[in-house]
Amino acid sequence: MTVRPGSADSKAPKPLLVLGLGNVLLGDDGFGPRVIGELAREPEAVVDADLLDGGTQGLGLLASLGGRAAVLIVDAYASGAEAGTLSVIESPSLEQLGARKSQTAHEGNAGELLSVAALTGDLPRNIILLGVEPERISVGMGLSPRVEQAVPKAVQLSLAALAKLRRTPACV
Image (cartoon, rainbow, N blue to C red; front, side, top):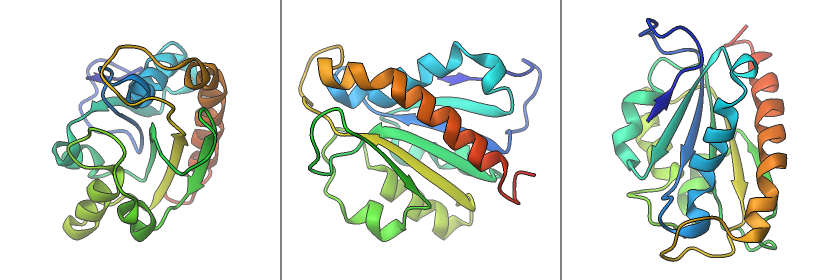
């Protein structure tokens, strides 16, 4: 589902993409789509960005990256920290993202998507990953309490990341 806060007739992709990854049917794996939903409630703050609930489309999202100057990826990201911990990784290396073992039910993780985008020439120049340490990735709707408590801060961090991406030469 794409949520485009700007004009409904605009078909060209905006230079900024906020991509939420995850499966809402698997507990904390639904973090990315949840943050996208919250950002959609603040259209004036994201008017120059496309919001995309990428769900579990995996490599099917490749076309969404083409022509973008920058992408903010929001996802459950298992790093071994305490559940609900937020991590902001700026310009993560493809090796860093691809090397981690997928802890989610995606048809591929962000690292695989970005690796293929690099091969096809669709990799945005600027990438920020906003991840939350999941507590529970198992069948069931809704986020765990710790991850739910992280959502408001994740929205703030997303807006700050977008502000930073707007200042990059490719977006100016």
